[in-house]
Amino acid sequence: MQKGNIGVTTENIFPVIKKFLYSDHEIFLRELVSNAVDATQKLKTLAERGDFKGEQGDLTVRVSLDADKGTLTISDRGVGMTADEIDRYINQIAFSGVTDFLDKYKDNANAIIGHFGLGFYSAFMVSKKVEIITRSYQEGAQAVKWSCDGSPAYEIEEVQKEDRGTDIVLYIDDDCKEFLEKTRIQQLLNKYCKFLPIPIAFGKKTEWKDGKQVDTEEDNIINDVEPLWTKTPSTLKDEDYKAFYRTLYPMQDEPCSGFTST
Ligand code: ADP
Ligand code: MG
Image (cartoon, rainbow, N blue to C red; front, top):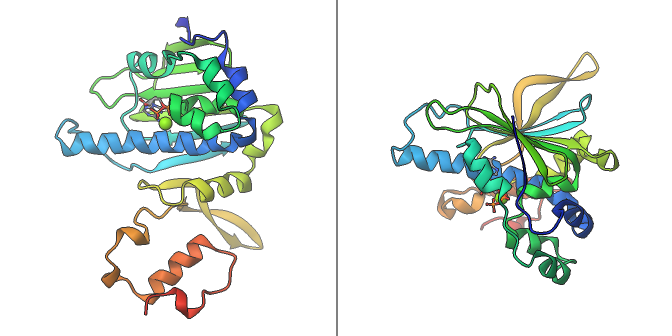
């Protein structure tokens, strides 16, 4: 096992992240899911260029809750990372003049996150510990686990992982228990992930059986990977517009007829 310190110039970036970004802390899920989608898109690009010749398989990004462990996990089967890449992309976040900047933008979480590419670190807004378990797409790559409890010290060790790709495991903070609730996560996925281009699954679809709601075999896919605006208008029917309206406003009545194409 190797130990080290994350390369930040302030003594500890995490309290800063928590303090300044507190009001907007639900965005962590958007950031982590979009990283998973990015990693999957990268794999597809490598495959198109002939730089990845293996089986792509199921590329669904999976979000799952474990109430007993108190974890929320985001898993992808994208490019993954080697230990060296974790070091470059996760450990060595270089902040020049970070305190000045945070001071200036303290009311705008999105500006900070966008500017510094702090996407991944937004996980620490809601977690007491974060693990990255990852295996690169490169042949014979060794899987690794990175873990960090919110201090600048991290640990990295070799692990077994069958699948290519990355699991981000969040050990949810005691004061953020809402993010261990199924309905809250479903709501956030609907809010931020509805139109991402890779299927995002959150658990299984449920059905009523013998007066109880039970899981089916079918993934609960929360997004539409081919939204209406990517299609040619002449191929769309009134029903398509109505279905789109229902996706956006599931609790509303049917739209009035002027909403659809004429
Ligand atoms: P950004 O996405 O803007 O680059 P992030 O902080 O969100 O910044 O992520 C930092 C980097 O960590 C990414 O650029 C990528 O190289 C790596 N990374 C994060 N999540 C994943 C993932 N799920 N799979 C592979 N690489 C990842
Ligand atoms: Mg990102």
